Length: 307
Image 1: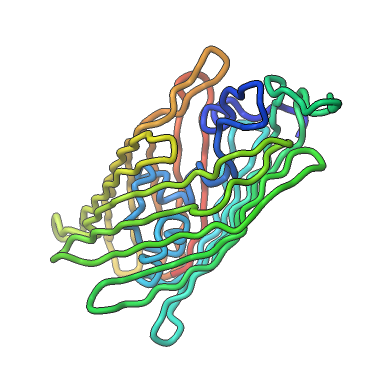
Image 2: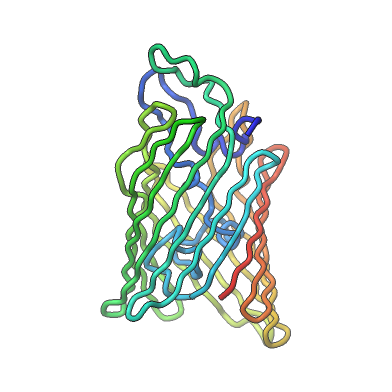
């Protein structure tokens, strides 16, 4: 990529770096971004979500809806995020697999190179990759899940990665789903010659999948609160209005809100508000989400889902 890392993405992870060999941000960067169009439309409150893309949030939830999802997100004209996930039953367990890939440009001007190495300054081609599998098992009415994934960050010709693990639990209490997830557990990895922390996160979420409002309308609600590795608390919530005028045709409108990272004089910050929608025809769905910036620009995400 010829351009620097998009300003909105930069506000997430490429923060200030001290004059040492320890990078203060967290990588892989792709783990800081939404895992799907539906999740983004709901403010990223997807810890208790349903569908294949929930593998990126909580392995305990992967068995609730089988299917496959492919989505693509653009940040301006320079960076692209893609995600593919699939989930389904396998005997007494549910199994899911997912891949996320972010292509961007990293501006390392503020990083101090290692002694004798002056090649890391300025804009460089960069990419972030995560690929993994997860398994879910039900024991005494509680869903337990575990996942393993390979995570990698690439800057110019250098790359570093390692194994990370996710754990989760979930259960229904009446019509409400409650779920807990511990994500991205593992050793720190390298980033452009520096040691960098992985974005370990603990989140608690709840969801009310569907409540009938009338003959053709249903309402779904979701909420979560997460504690990130740096101690930051991130609440999020979202709602979706479902309209099914005839059998097999479904329209969904979504809106969400979450706490986002602050911008600076040189970065645009994400807006705390996101919106989205879906159109479903039998088992085929098209999903869309939109999030503006606190400043010029916006990000769009579109996905295709079969379930």
